[in-house]
Length: 370
Image 1 (cartoon, rainbow, N blue to C red):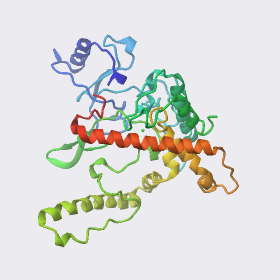
Image 2: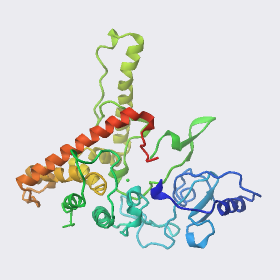
Image 3: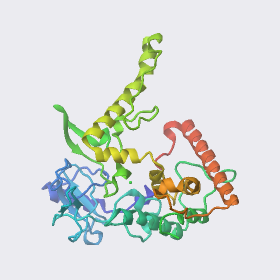
Image 4: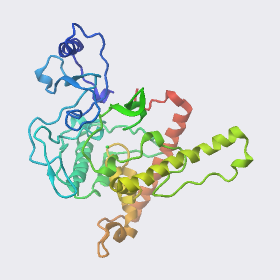
């Protein structure tokens, strides 16, 4: 929370809320995550109605950007001026624009959390997929270079005897990046109690941004399962010994199969009705996607894994690049490869130690930094 802390004038915020709603006083203020401007009016998404807002901190007595809605949800602003870029391009090539909307800088957490919010780097928008990915590398380079202290990893312990991150190691991994040498779940969905299949509202838009589909595509949280993942169009198989189990044990043993069946059904329906989304989901199981994903977090904790993955590409580079005559663009000595292997092993030990601590503390584990 300290990374997003802003001191505001609560009295003035309550006064603005009362004025916007025509009330004498405001009796309660609650903080909700960010959302997107005009989502209700233009995009016809079920979000609460906007009553009043101000995106300029220096122009209001509250001391911060604010928005007052039917359900109090804080909105981040979009750019105020029109853009020459289209909002999106349809499959037939038509450019779609809207004089009231513009794609502004990204509000994704990775552009602000872990000290990034204080660093000056380009946050978009971008006019091509290549520009988007190159910008990620420049962002990590700027943050690693200018932050006085590296942020701590939330998934692994670091220190003597295990992996110890340094700016030098992070920058060495980053120089392997091209041209340098991103939640829908049941608590955020509101249903009509008289018609449970009707969605009447969606909240929690703080991570909403324009980004490649493969970075934010996922199956719904509500059908996540804890067993082996179900990929492509494969179908799960039930246990063959269910008939030999007691009723209670049988029900427990069959539950993972039912969860996996839901995931399989989702994949099948997505493949038929939304092939573009299905393709993005399948891309997430490739090494190319893994490298793109690891590169997004080089500032915090992925440099060892990323660097080792790049080193391993030497033997499969032609297949990876899709060009038979392509030359592997990096060079690693035997000593450097041994160092990378030791770093990855240290990261694994650190993750195991963190997992052990988390299991011991249970609900007391400070997962969100509280």
